[in-house]
Length: 405
Image (cartoon, rainbow, N blue to C red; front, side):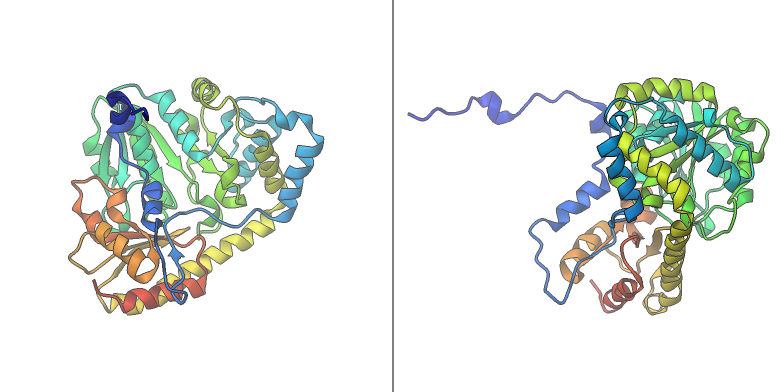
C-alpha cells in the first residue's frame, strides 16, 4: 500500500509572523510571473520595459580584466576587506572629488554588494525599531521593502508639480522619531533630475533638524546636466548630515557582480561595517577588479553610454505627441525612465497585465511605487527604457496609440 503524507506535511510549515510578511513582493518578481505561459505572435515581439538594468555585458576590456584576475590573482578568490578594496575606495574617492569639485577621502568611501545593500547598511546604522524615514512617492520599491523589513516606519512624501518633492511638506512630517529623508536623483521611478537648489534645501532641512539626508545617485552617470548635479560635497562637514549612495551596476553593466558604494562620515562607516560583515562579509572581489578597471579606463565609453540614454530620452519627449493626443501625459523623463499617466478608467495594474497579453508591452504600474492609499499610482506607469533603443521606443508608441482597453 502506498504511503500517504501526514497532514502536517500537506498543510505546509507553520508560519509565524515575520517582518518579510509586512512588505510586498518585489514588483520585478511579480511582473515576471505575468510572462508565465505567455505566447505572443511572431510579429509582436515582447517589449520589456519593466526593469531598469542593462542587459548587455560589460565592455571586453573590463571582462578581460576580470578574467585575468580570476586566473592570476589568488587574492580575488578569498575574503577581502569588509568595506572594499583600498585601491577601489581610493579611486572612487578621487573620481567623486573631481566630479563634485570637492575633497572626498578614501576613508569616507565604502564598497558594498550593490546599491540596495548600501541603502540597507545605511538604515541599519542610523535607525532602530519604530524610527521613521521620509520617503518621497512614487518611491523606489526596494527602499520601502527594506524599511518594512527593518521595522522602520515609512513616512510617504507625495511629490508635487514636475514630480518633485517639497522640503516644506517634508518638514511637516518630521517627528521626534524621524531619522532620515531619502532622495533619489535622477529619480527612480519618475526619471526627473532634482535641481541643485532643491537638493540643498533638503540638506539644510536635515541639518537644521538633526536628521540624515540620504541621497541615492545610482543613475548619476546618465544625468543630462554637465558637471556636478549639486554642491553638497562642498559644504563644510557635509558628512555630518549627508550619506551618499552610488552604483557601479548601471555605469559599467556590472549588475550580476553586485557592486555599490557609500560616501559617509567614517563613524557611520564604522557602524555599517558591522552590518556588512554580518550580511556579506565583503563585496565580490572580481567585481571590484572590474569596477576599478572601469573607473580608470572607461570615461570615454561611459560618455557614449550617457549620450545613448540622452538620445532615447529625446526620442520619448519628441515622439510622445500621438499619445498626448489620446490623453496620455508624460510626467517625468530622464536617466533610464519615463513616468506617464494613462487616460483610462481602469487600474494601472489591471491594464499592465492586459498590455503584456494584448500588445506584448511590459511596464510596471504606478501603484507598485506608491502606498495603497495614494490613488495617483492607479493612473500611472513607469517605462524603463534601458534596453529599448529609439526604434523600440517608436514601436512602443505605435502600439499604445492604437490601443483602448
